[in-house]
Length: 79
Image (cartoon, rainbow, N blue to C red; front, side, top):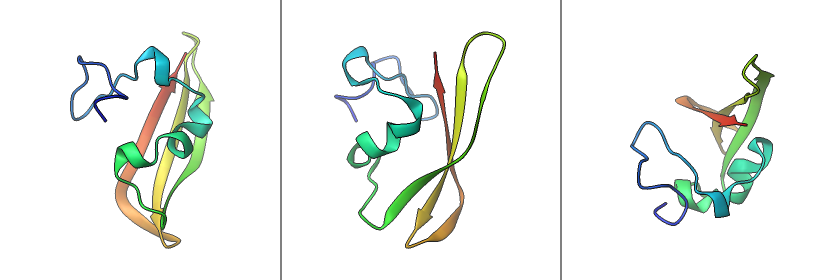
């Protein structure tokens, strides 16, 4: 995670450094290992929307062996 995140990141807000940025839709495919996700884990894109400031917000839900993991969702913000 230290190679992925800026030093200003915290446990609840991770700012991705410039060299590791990619599209929100492929974020967890590219960074699966950094988040400690195993082969049986999948982050499924549930929805996305654009706001009036030009950001796109992607909501992902974690699944383990195709079972929904309650309370394990992430929102990726992209500009």
